[in-house]
Image 1: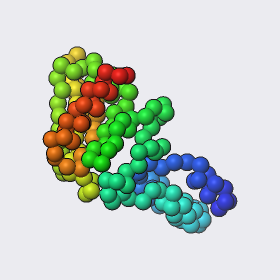
Image 2: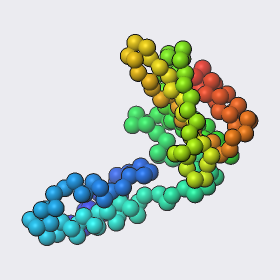
Image 3: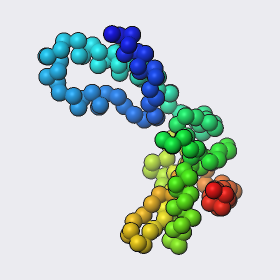
Length: 164
């Protein structure tokens, strides 16, 4: 049984930031009384899944250029660009929204949620008047607040909107 569990765990992928333990807490605690093996199996699954998770990124340079985590469920790339100061994300669907609803573009440069190794998370949103809704159309992680970094971000945003 243990080997079947391990084999099953190795075949699934877990994205960054997913904590397995809360998932198990949703299962009734009474299960431990019904099946004494439950707690042992639960902790073994957690250990094996956590071994599979990538280590936390501590520097900007550690962000990979290619990763399975940069793909949508449809297999489309959404990591568009990375250099030493900027990493830019936008899915093909977000590009379409950006192109179609670009009358009102809103920009949010937030520092509060920026990873420790970076300076800012930069988010663009568009507004669809018909649906009276905002849609996130891109996000980027910036290492600094230099004018050249912002210039590169806007160049990549415009280029991507005109390419797809």
